[in-house]
Image (cartoon, rainbow, N blue to C red; front, top):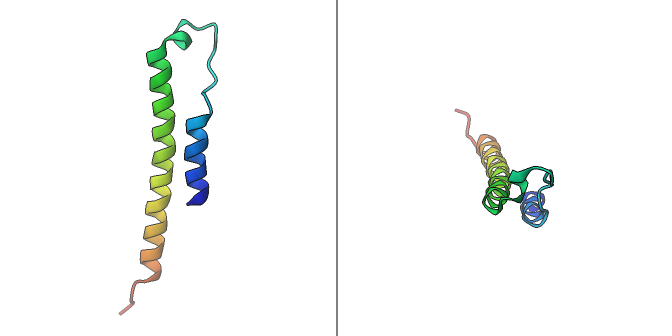
Length: 65
């Protein structure tokens, strides 16, 4: 989970590389949206890992009758 948290911080710090010749790359709203999508993608990955870990933990602790 520490690695996932580090990835979230890194994703927030690193600006996404854009094609500077594209007019859309200079649109602040689009840049902001792309950054938000990147942040949500990383958050989604973190949450999926947490779910997987909880499922594995739950499976390990099940009592077999």
